[in-house]
Image (cartoon, rainbow, N blue to C red; front, top):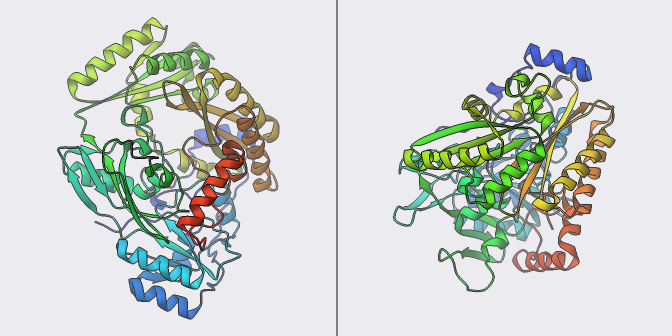
Length: 523
């Protein structure tokens, strides 16, 4: 396997793929927000590492000197995640959250030994997969610890086993999305998990954050794909999941799925896989309003006719994302664009597409053919690159998401949008799409753009707080798939209540009595 591409500390993704804004987009942005060039800083370095010689030697004794790294460049690459807040801090030269040391274990036995060393030397340990967190999930509270260790799982990239009869595969946690898909493809299989972070996020990260991909309507959320996992905790190693289903007490898989590295380090994940699709087809639909499109999605879900991919942009997102909005509606009336995707055998795709086309046509949707769908497929992983290009010219861009039941969708949409618009001020743009759909409800994914204030960190914190307050007040979740991290903790506590917090703290105290795992995150 070739060396993996490292993301730039101040940007998303492959540095070679970073581009400036196209002139057409630049002109529109200048009209809407003005242009203020914000070049990236060169040569920012993290604070000097503070780890003691004895602790460093103990870590080296477990994994070897060559896999214990304290150089500035490596530590900078393992600093925080890729939220706009993270990037704004890095662009200002602030790398104060850098780990003191990056340690790269090769296997489960080394992780077990490393956690023992960390407990003995009072080292905070932050499991690191792809570094794609957007909620502060990689920022440890270091005050009570001798040093912070980034436990980098980059060496754990094996396909450990395939059960072709049961259609399961066991993967190591350091595999990035494309790497996992390539290994499964050798067996004619696919995981089918394609979040926007797919190119850089890892299998371990998918599990630890309860990730949800763009094809979740067909393949399922990642937590629904997991049939077993092995986790190393400071109190010992546990493997959970011995059958496709059981009634053997509470499902302990769910304790670790979404635990964000606070309860243990995931060392293997056994997942349900599917046969590689023979056919992939993507189709656009036009709806006269966001409400009409949402009702159509609900009908599909409740009739058991969901395709592999389904997403719906509101009027504002439809108008901004399309080069020629009049191409799907009347001039000045783009309506709302829905993308549907079908994957599988030729006969299965043909049958599902025909049934869906019949139902959506009866509901007065307009079939736009495959061009909008193929356009979406081509750019499905590109939005974070555009975010960076807009930060370069002084435009604050960020996303947030939530989920609720169908009966509460309109209230949640209106309240969160109003909260964002009122706090970001005149000229701000708030876009939304329904990203994931269930029989009982859906996820709303918001994107905002506003002219950067003098203090963009405070600017976004104010807007994020107002939007998060609106979510909880509306009875929705604080996060559908971005996880809790540090950013969402105040609202997570409100969502689960004091007894829920008590349960999590009790589990944490049992599995991690010294509190060394990702302190300050989630719990």
